[in-house]
Length: 243
Image (cartoon, rainbow, N blue to C red; front, side, top):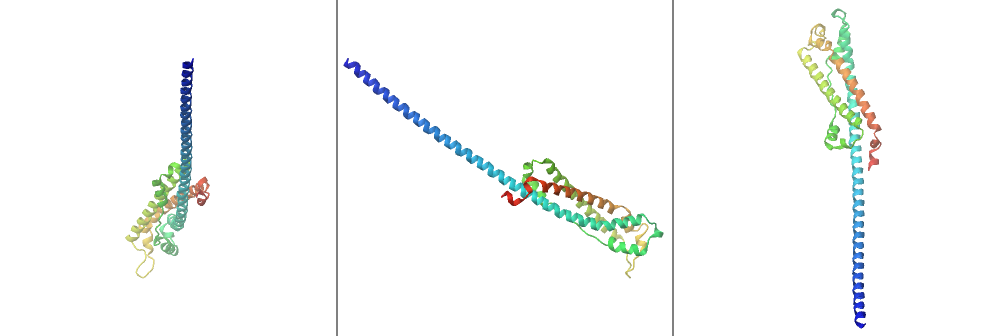
């Protein structure tokens, strides 16, 4: 009987030890799982904050680049306006020559156009730096409005094309000017050099200026439309609000 009680006591003691150890392991597992949970929560919060901060910077960069493009296009609009202002009297001269034969050409009118058009040369330079930076920045992928992105590409293509055309117009006109100077040494206008097949007469009868004016007006319209789209773009309402 005493032996059985001993065995029961030892068994009870062993069971208690096992229970205590099991409880300790459970507590350790709970503690470990709690620590893992805290770490996961901290990691997720960190990732969320990182993504939020990154998106904030992306929006800021997008706004800055698009605002720079808008300002650059507005400068180019001013340049296009000046090119149109320059081309208008040239187009008038073209129409005058095309609507009059040699006999009906008025010397005073020819003298006016010789000064205001024939020997009036202007070079125009358009800016594309903001667009070049925009292309190389990777900001384009952030713009969800693909129509806006396409408009920006197209308007700059038109501006580059217009720039090349105006340069060609300038160079061609300069070559015609070099061929024959329409004023004599006395300073008097030599009418014969502004009629028939004379260099400047040929230049203005070619329709170059009218073609350039049409291109300038079309590019002006396209550029203004692109600026209008940029002004309506959500992230561009105010660059300072992005910070």
